[in-house]
Length: 351
Ligand SMILES: [Fe+2]
Ligand SMILES: [Fe+2]
Image (tube, rainbow, N blue to C red):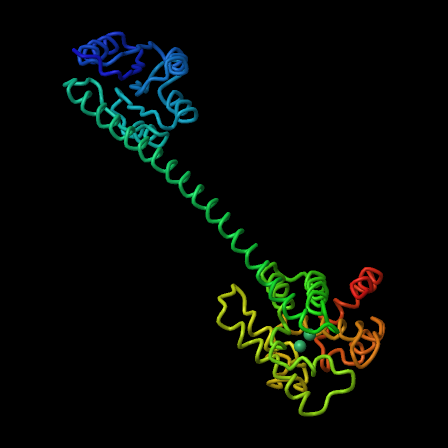
């Protein structure tokens, strides 16, 4: 008979059984290891790593239950078939509970039945192995795809940041008197958001929106922006349109955050005195409330065509006066805390 390349470990304290089963299986092409008790059986199992185990339940010292438990512990994928001579169903149930794959009762009338049970268990073991391999291959593929997606995502994110920066610089460059305004608002707004412990998506949204919050000013005539004297009412009304114009420019860009809305609301105030919609506190996005504070601090701390630079303390005075009235109190407090800790660093932003 051709060698099947399958090894069977047969553990039974009855010599007659060992030889009967062994001879039959060897004749059918299996390699059979025979052990006369549980202890020897376990030793052989560790040494030969058989494809399948046949084990008697009632044996002196180390019985079949113990063999089962040990095999299950070390190699749960190895099929174990119990050969029970006791005829007590509880023993069979206990054996199955401990991980036996199948059972046969002694005396085995027809060894072809034993071979059938053996093959069934081996087939099942091979299917489990195939499934396991398939699962591993799939997991590896998912891991590779996830890594590739992450890489693409990071590239897209980096491109987005660079595009946002380019747009921001373009707007800032248009007005030499407020050059770098959005960049400085960006630094400040980001620090406030971090101080407030906001989640990373909100922080990223604030970082993008603050760099673009005045992009709508490209529609405002340059002479209005750099006018050395106070603006007339009509001129002011034109400038006020920049919130909507910014929204209009950004609304069709598919940002992962509501950037257009944040920009739209950056001049809204808690008490409804802001523009363009006169929204009140609960209707204004938190991101816009944070940018509003950074915007006013920047505007008051930097030089303007119609007045020299004031200082951060003046801006703090303005925010303190209107904390909870026009400015979000939590955002204001976060800024105060930040300033109390890093006043020099913040002043440095405006130099
Ligand atoms: Fe603005
Ligand atoms: Fe601004």
